[in-house]
Image (cartoon, rainbow, N blue to C red):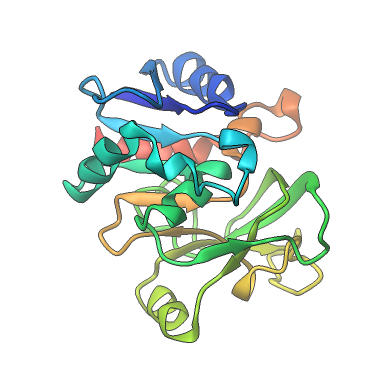
Length: 229
């Protein structure tokens, strides 16, 4: 597959994503500057983590106006895969490709540490290489990861199997204590109804090899590649 990794002013996980896809999965990867008006024949798009435009105004609010986002929205609407990680997830929410909004962490502090994630749906295009109720160890690093959505849409997400990952403890229990940011129902990652757009707050690219403390994040990229190749 040919991956396009979007680079905004303030992106800081773009090279991490590039390294995982190139070195671990031998995929073709290109960096795409946010002012581009083309996706250069990409088969999949990844919006990486970071602080696009310094998170001024609010996370992702300025990035959604970048020229390349018009191309990404059309790309997603055509059924092709888009993955948003951390700030990328926030951008997907801002541009309407995923429902909901991000609030500041319940603690009102930046949180950077490993967390555990319960795989809530292992049949999606982004989790098919996981097992249902598998627990993954992947780090987070964010100040605004408190996912909020109203009751109606929350019910739709739950009913349609669109909640792919929830924050949990090491045993898979989704308790308030295991929720690092206060997100509704412990939501850590959701996909759209069509199953081709996925946003998550944890950083799978930072858990790509055991030397980093975990290689659990590789299953996200592996699933995407298997699903859309």
